[in-house]
Length: 209
Image (cartoon, rainbow, N blue to C red; front, side, top):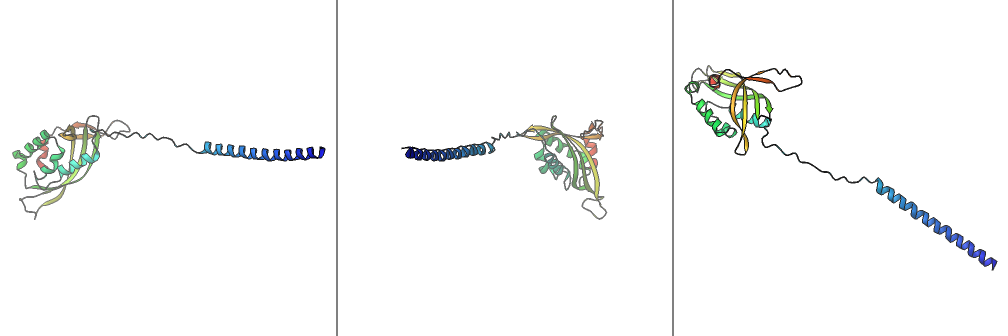
C-alpha cells in the first residue's frame, strides 16, 4: 500500500507541476497580450474644423486681376468689357462718364498700348479697402496710328485706393481714388499710412487715358 501511495503521490506531484506550468504560461501570455494592447497607440478621433472663407474678404489675386484689366488696353475705352466685371454698376457708369469727358477724349489715339507690369498691393479686409501702387507702360504718339516717332514703353506709376462693396454675391470695386502713400510710423507694420491725393482723378487721367 505504501508503494502504491508513494507512486500516486509522485504522479500527483508531476501532474501538479505540469498544471502549474500550464497556468504560468497562460498567465504570462495573458499579461503579454494585455501589455501589447495597452502599448498599441489608440486611434485619436481627429476633429477637423473647416475654416469658413469670409465671403467679404478681398484677395491679392482679386485686386491684381482688376488692375490688369484696368491698366491694360489698346486705347481709351477698349478695355471696358474687361474691367466691367470687377466693378459695381454705379462705379462702371462713373468710369464710362469719366472716359467720355472731352479732356480725356482729346488724348484718345495719342496715348495707347497700355500694359500692366506689376503692383504693390495692401489689403484691409476690415474696411474692405485695397491700396495699390501700380507700375505700367504706354506709348505716346504725335500722330494717330503713326508709330514712326512714337515714344514706346514709357514707364508710369499710379497709386490708388479701391473701396469694395458686396454686389451680385461678390465683392466689387465701388470707389477708385488716387492717393499718396507715405511710410508708416508704426514699427513692424507693412501697411502704409496714406492720404487722399489732392489731384482729382479726371485730371490725373490726362496722361493715362
